[in-house]
Image (cartoon, rainbow, N blue to C red; front, side, top):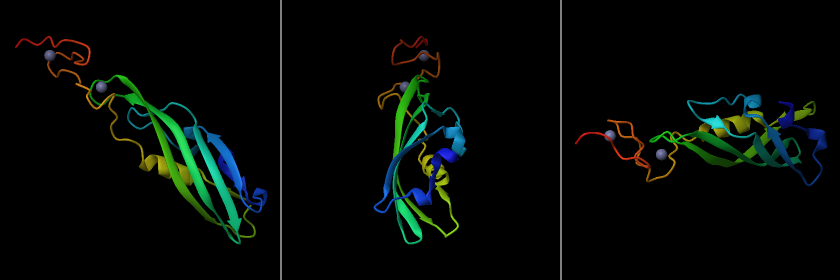
Amino acid sequence: VDALKICVKDLPPGGLEKTLTCQPEDIGLEDVFDLHFGRPLSIDVKLEKVSNTVFGQAHISTVITTTCGRCLADVKQDLSRDLELNFTVEKQTDCIDVGDDVRQEVVMNLPLKILCSEECKGLCPGCGANLNTEQCQCKK
Ligand SMILES: [Zn+2]
Ligand SMILES: [Zn+2]
């Protein structure tokens, strides 16, 4: 992905700090079950080249939107991850691409289940009432 490529010759001595942005689908991140990406990924990178290694850190942030695992209400959750980067570069290497590292980090850290609140009471299995806001209609 061009947006996540950094040309090795653009890395100044002392390093480079930059914010990259990309759409999740640009790096093959697709909605999983009912997890959606609520906004593009923002990636703050700090990179430095020392001899034939480019290394540094990236901070990834985005927002995941989904439905509560218990009551199905819409919920949003920030996703924010730090990751270490390390690339070996050859003389003929023009650019490095942080896309693969970013995708792996996000995929490995997608939440399995998001709740609107730890105290969410969920839906009644009998009548389907949202017990956070409604009275159960089941006959006792
Ligand atoms: Zn809920
Ligand atoms: Zn009920």
